[in-house]
Image 1 (cartoon, one colour):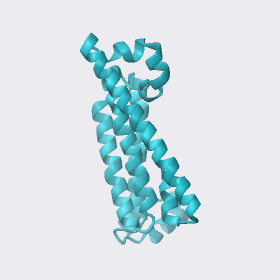
Image 2 (cartoon, rainbow, N blue to C red):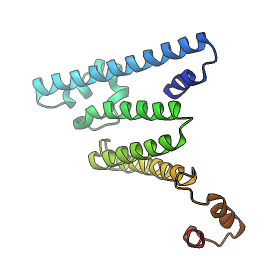
Image 3 (cartoon, helix red, strand yellow):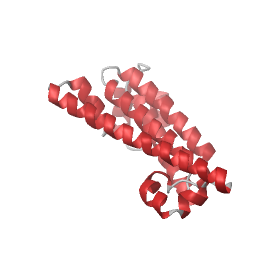
Length: 183
């Protein structure tokens, strides 16, 4: 939603579309930011009262039903990770939407952003159990690999990508390492 709303600002179809895009973008961002602040306040209240953020967050049915969609996948001590996750999605959508005409800037920014997110996720391991951490770190690794491919195949370094692709497609036994050595 955020990518499409921000992208609409670059296309400028009509004034009504821009107004709707801005309305929905700021509404969604505002509601999610308010909910994230509310979760952090509830966790801080739980820490001051019970010395544990999980007590109110996971035992109070009112908090769990109202705000649980934001923090239920994270460990009780990593309730705050909802904020970096939302900021990551917002910044990534901004670079995708506004960087359409500047491919080099977009590719490098996405590479840096994905690297930062991968390091944060691998270091903090904010999800509930080991399997979920492994699964989400794998997703972040694949996103990082995709951003590396975006940088390599977008022609930023002026490598002969067409020759590389032609060599790989013409000889199925040819590996990526052999293709690079022929260049």
